[in-house]
Every structure is written in structure tokens, then in C-alpha cells.
Length: 270
Image 1 (cartoon, rainbow, N blue to C red):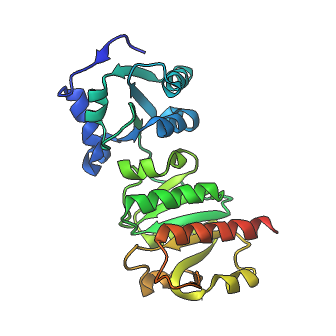
Image 2: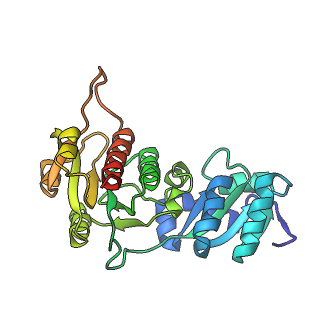
Image 3: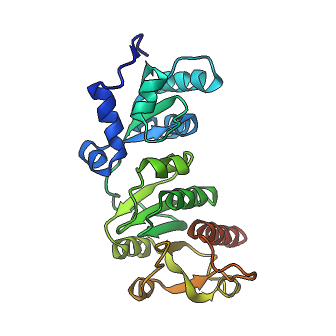
């Protein structure tokens, strides 16, 4: 920890960190922003090797003491900054007094899905809240990996990072250029590929047939368009959640959470 207090909101360093809110800058520098005590804590606990620097306000609140200890234990540089500097660095309006700069990771290595039993593939998911919530649900359901495929939102987008509440650092998160590549990787690891789609068979039918009990990769499509016919053709089968009430549809993240948990239940009941 340095004794110097960062106070110049217009400094080059502050502007450079703030620029990481843009995808182009994240890709150019291989860095991304982690904002708020919960996310920074999870980063330091689970992926300290990715952490470059932590910037935090000075104080004696529990999170400030804990962040300082975790950074020290991990050998991570901690710098003190004013509230105004933290706000200038952050993408969010209320960064809660702490941000970290972390290194992004590259393309998945061969065998990244080896021994995986539950994987979520996000295809052309554009909403950061949805993407982060699905990732968080996958983590909670015990998934082995989440794949962002095709034109899906960048998993290092600040809003995605925040909405995962730390799950980004708990399980492997892979980025693949196409849905075809993601499906191919899943099949290479002996996973069945199921597409979540309103035109598919009822999930109760799939469960009764034992289709959810083995290693599975779920494909979740765009919030507005879903999956195209070509996308669905890549899967072994399509499965839908029935709607018993008057709701027109389910939010993507809600449907994905239910299907991931249905699969986790089926796998664990064997």
C-alpha cells in the first residue's frame, strides 16, 4: 500500500482506467474494471493472479479493512484514492469506494471443457444484466463453464462484471467466435447439446426420458430473437419451459436459471 492519496480526477492514470469501460480499450490493454467491495473481494479471493491494482478510499469500514488485508495477502498493490477519483474511474454512478484493474484472459485452451458435466452457452446475448445473471445462475447451479459465443456481449463489460456479483471469478468463462465452435467444443468433451427454445419439447418430457441426467451444454439465444433454425439444428434437441399461467413469456435469465437447475437436480439425483 502506498502512502500517497490519489486526488487528481483529470490525471492520465485516472483517464486510462476510466477508458476501460469501452470494449475497444479493454481489448487494446487486456485489462478490465472490477467495481464495488463484493466483486473486488471475490476477485482477490478467487483470482488474485489476475489482479493488477486495487484503488480504495481510506477508512475503517469492514470492507475497507478486509480489502486491504486480502490485497496484502495476495501481494497486490493497493492505492488509496479520494471518493471523487474512484467515481471518475468507475462506469457506475455509485462505485462504493473501491475499484480494481484486472487482466482479461485469452482464448480457451484445448480441453478447457474436459470432464465438464454442465455448461451454459450464451449465443448473441446482448443485455449485460441478462448475461451476468445467467453466469451467476450457472455458478450457483454448479456449472463447470460458461461460454460467450458469437456476437454476445463482452463478459468483461463493467455491467456484466457487476451483475455476476463475483461469479465471473468462480468458474471458467470462455469466449468463442461462433456458436458452431462452442458446440464443437462441447461435443468434443462428450456433452449433449440442448437448445432452450419455445418450439422444443416440454422440459418435463425431457426429464422423464432421462435427457437431463447426463453431461449437458445448454444453448441460450438472443433475448428478442431467440435461436434461428440453423442454430437449433446444431443441437441434439430443443427444450422449452411450459407456461402455466397467463404470462406471455419468461425473461431469458429466468428461463436459463430454471433449466440449469433442472439439469443440476437431474444430474445429482442419479
